[in-house]
Length: 415
Image: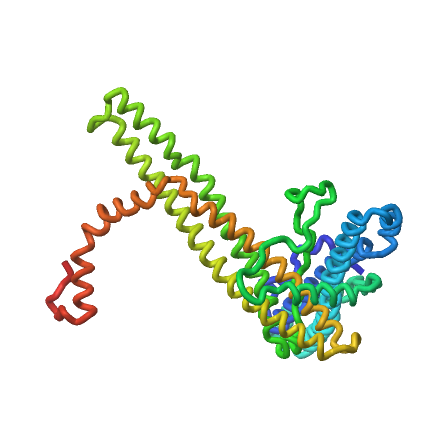
């Protein structure tokens, strides 16, 4: 049964929740159950799609056709391994989402029963709440009975070996010293074999650990929070870089220089001419440019600090996962937790490399000062004119007060 499409007030509804504490719990339970249903359907669809790409029968014709072409067989191997890892990533999310579905349904059932019991115990002055409860309970029952079928997908042939081998490759290649690599893990382009056309073919998702596993594997738990934070900081830095690039058209020092030299050649550079207005306008543009450039500097600094911390966390998580793998040779023992930890190490490795490539590009943008250092000069000049001159004596007075060389009293005042 699907929830009503024409329901005017979906859960959670603040007006209904405000009526009664029990109704507030019902609204919360409905919202969580709906979210769990939505997430499960999302990952089940994705796992189903990627499961087809990881099905060995999908590759039969290509392998047979390329049986004498070692280069093509290598490409097929790369694609199949990455398709299998991607399926595993989505399938793990699907499994975890199903657990949330069952938990959400159980809690919603309890909330429905609690709401019914609350109505049974209403005092006379609370009877007006009954129709409000009944209407929301109709929606709660629809959500609780929504058709969400558990879908089981067969794992690709040899997925366990692919996971373990990919992780062992990461362990062997992980830098023990020196800088972290920024090259792509699985460079590939299905339309071109030229190296410059390659894109990162490994696209894995971070999967959350259960509460128990998070307590037992603290480095792996920290790794789960790392990738989303890096993604936010990368987006912030890229937006800041975009603002700097767009400012080039405004600050355009070459155009400003051409206007000045035109005035020089025409011998019209005199006080009162429009050159003064041009200079004032250009300095305003320089200040604006320096502002966006400083914002990019801050964003790059934060991103760099976070990725450096991320490398430390990833290093600890790889060691923790490697130890867990060695201690659990039985594939059925702690299989889900181990699969999640391996997946997250592989996903974080890809993300760290991507961030380092972004940092290289962002740093190049910062080094290319489009104002030709005129922005920093304009900031210093405006600071000296508007801030230093007016507030210096007050700042010196305050320094004396703070370090005790100037005694303040009832009649003292700052100049």
